[in-house]
Length: 123
Image (tube, rainbow, N blue to C red):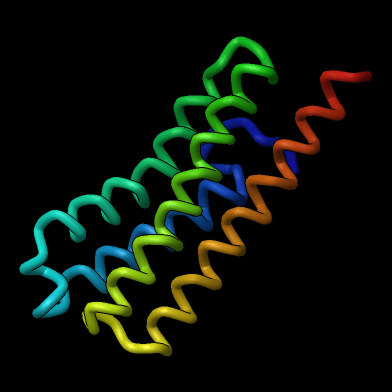
């Protein structure tokens, strides 16, 4: 499939699903009252898709890869913040595992896309 718009990128689609999951979790009673943690994890989730979209309009693959690396690191940030949410009992173990696994999926897709763009640079 040819990528014509950032919405065609699989890692963007997976990031969008992750953002929906994060917002659903943070709307839960106890989590919603922890404004600092709620804001940080929501911002990190939105950062994934935003950086992919912004990077898509980069002039070079090298610049796009930089934005993809930001997205990758935002997914790592979410994974770390999920531990805080779990430790504070804002989310249960199943919610933690499911969302953590979504982060892994997003990171795998982003990592694969980075490798693809990097190889394209070397051709």
